[in-house]
Structure formats: structure tokens, C-alpha cells
Length: 178
Image (cartoon, rainbow, N blue to C red; front, side, top):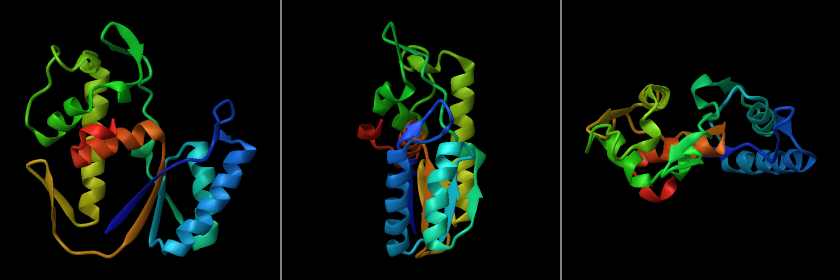
């Protein structure tokens, strides 16, 4: 199975949609995804992701399946080393060690996790993404995924930059993605 994590087109955050350039990007993306031959299309419920996905849906003739757990992470007010920063500026090794089970949460090293809401959201994201992958026959075991049934499906997930980074780190354990 191939999963394409796709950040929405250039956003106009004030209206939760795309700019004119974002619409051009989404139109080009739709054509590219059609040439790849997507089998399934998922998207965040936020407007900018739905609009981007609509271009892909039009070109691929797929139905957009909305996945609420793929929403943008509202984690821009995280205290990191005494300064406010987005969550994805947190050291990547912290995310991958936590998701792989190599270590437990620690207020000493996981500065952004000092607030319970972040711990909860990360756990929810991990559980929802594990359930999503399980529905596609990938089962999480000891921080890795066992293939229950081989698949050649190509799946597009239109989401958000910060979400995609955190998801990729939690799934792949790659320190460079955050």
C-alpha cells in the first residue's frame, strides 16, 4: 500500500479556503493524483483540505472520505526552551522515542507535553491513525506495523503541514520529519 500525505494548497486562513494560487496548485495536484491512479481519497474536514481534495476527487472520480482526526493540530502556543514555538519544532527524537515505546512521557524532556491537552491529543492521534491503518490491514506491534494482508492500494490523505509531520514521525519514527 502507498499512502500519499498531501498538504492542502496555498491557504487563505481567514476564510479557511485556498488562495487563487492554492486553487491552481490543487488543480495540478488533481491531475497528478489521477495519473498515479489513487484508489481511495481521505481528507480533513477543514475547508482548505476539503477544497484541495475536491480537485483530486474531480480528476480521479473518487468520493472524499472525511476523517476528523486529520485536522490541523492547534499546537502553535507550545513552550519550548523558554520560547513559544509550534509543536513541530520539538526535537524529532522525542516524538519517535515516544511513539516507538522506547521511553515514557517525561516533563523533563518533553517540554511541549507539560500540558495534559497535548498528551491527550498526541495519544488520540496515534490511536486514530492506528485504527485507520488497521482498517487497511496494518497492525501496530511494538512500535512497528505488521502487514496482515498485502495491498497494492494507493491512498491519498489531504491534511495539514503540522499534522502530516507529527503523523509521519509517530508512524515512521524518523527524527528528521519534525
